[in-house]
Image (cartoon, rainbow, N blue to C red):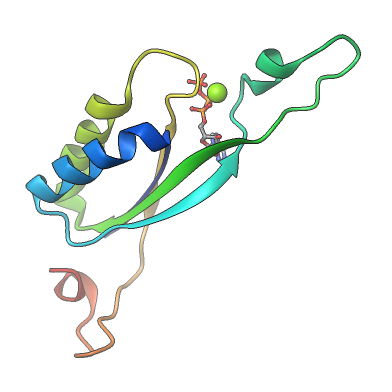
Length: 112
Ligand SMILES: Nc1ncnc2c1ncn2[C@@H]1O[C@H](COP(=O)(O)OP(=O)(O)OP(=O)(O)O)[C@@H](O)[C@H]1O
Ligand SMILES: [Mg+2]
């Protein structure tokens, strides 16, 4: 299993949600976040001051079986890539286990 964490712009969230559930993802969690990406220093620098500023965004977390990761990542990129700075970033983490509390199922059985 993998955990996908991606940081995207608010305006892309509805399209991402729609497409991912068409693909049949088992669940999703989102959070409103503030973050800083690499080129923010350039974008916010004023003479004598290069303190990066926080920008609002959305963190999307999805836990998936390994086989589903590529399709989900490609779908997210297809929706969110404009070519502009700040399109977002995707992190893919190995996930040790999942447990459905109601049944005690573990691993991918807890997901689907
Ligand atoms: N290394 C990182 N660690 C944690 N969060 C990050 C990291 N890089 C980006 N983020 C999160 O992703 C958001 C969007 O990042 P962003 O798309 O600006 O990345 P970038 O590396 O600056 O790419 P770009 O050059 O396209 O702007 C940030 O506001 C932050 O919340
Ligand atoms: Mg950036």
